Amino acid sequence: MKVLITGICGFVGSSLAEFLQERHENLSVCGIDNLMRPGSEVNRERLRKLGVAFVHGDLRVASDFEMLPVADWVIDAAANPSVLAGLPGGCSSRQLFEHNLGASVNVLEYCKAHRAGLVLLSSSRVYSISLLRSLPLKVHNNAFRLTATTQLPPGVSAQGIGPDFSTSAPVSLYGSTKLASEIMALEYSNVFGFPVWIDRCGVLAGPGQFGTPDQGIFSYWLNAHLRQRSLRYIGFDGRGMQVRDAMHPRDLAALLDAQMRLGRAGGQRVYTAGGGPKNAMSLAELTAWCDARFRPNAPVADTCPRCYDIPWVVMDNGNAECHFRWRVEVSMENLLSQIAAHAETHPNWLERSGL
Image (cartoon, rainbow, N blue to C red):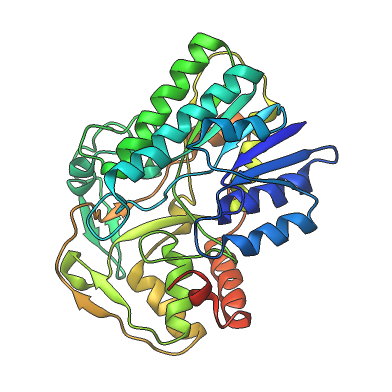
């Protein structure tokens, strides 16, 4: 099988290339990346050692696709991953559109031309911000926990948020580009007859991630805590109670492998995938873990909220588990220990991340 991975020099793209090769004896991987993110050049050398073919190109430029070989499947792991993208202080809203939606159309045209299947890595941030903020939550052991004392809205349960949860606006500029890409992918699949899987992923984390506060929060927090950098609990009374789940890319690779092997026509196409309730943790709990592993570093309370911040997001893996016999194998403790070990042996990692 021949697989093309977009954004292959990012943390997710390079990790998927490695872990998919571990699962396939006869897998050929090629990737494309524009190398614009700080640190991505490091992964280019890593991929060379893995025997992965690399093309330096920009997905926004249609002619750059002429350099790519024919693939059986495309894994679209390229995007500006920050929910704050498009807001003042970051990339412009036009740049966000070009990277996350305009480039997606070029990927779809490639799939159309070569009848390649597509696995689109989407995001938990396609969901309604107002409904996520209105979920019934309580504080327990320094973390927001979902409570079922009142009726929950469709698409959410004790197991987390599923694909049927509302995507009504606002979902953030970033979330809207990912949701629009999902819609375009499903339309292309229907009209041009190539298979599409869409995975709305929770936070992906692991060793070697170039974490920043608005992207790889688990990696960033551990690296910054170890180096006694200033940390902040933003919003929600400045207590660090907001919760996210985390998933190792090795587990994501197992799901994608199962999806690409399955030649099912029709049926469900959109799935949620993340660490789930067992791999969910608040910033306050993460700080306590870091205090025990390294040494204490107390975050500063910043009670000023940001427009896209939400208190609790945990992904429900039930459909993926049922349809693909897939389960998350890397525990939160194992995942954090891997990040910590990497942080301890790479003292300049935050600088390589551009921080």
